[in-house]
Image (cartoon, rainbow, N blue to C red; front, side, top):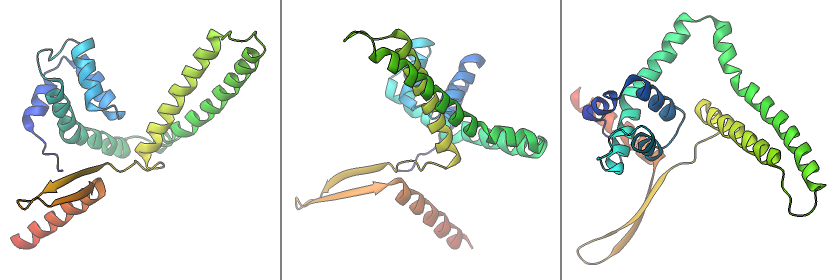
Length: 196
């Protein structure tokens, strides 16, 4: 299923106050789902409160696919053209730094869990719980960065369903993102060949 980028989606989202828009951009670029960001907008920011949450989700996803994606690519291109190589290398090392921090945090957590195991049965340490949360946050950030850089492959989304023809025959189908990309590429090649 191809997402059609609507200019109205961009216009609506861009009408947000600048500080809210900056947070929305950040959340979308970090990979948060459109539904989570829609809930954030309605519940925390009190924006688009009367609107259907799923319509807002669609608008956010279209905004991410269109305007936000274009701006992110422009920023990366500009950074690569204007910034020093050392600055880009420092950003590339962020993943390595996160990995080191996660390993250090794991060591701290192991110490806390050893201390907790020495406690009488059933007593949990609040510090251990906090250390677990910190390790989880580091691992989530590391995973996102690995997905963005292509080190981890994103699991393909697939759409499954069934079609019933007029004779009552049921046919099962499955459509993946890879098939959609291939279909889009073939459509664009077909369009180019027709116009030449």
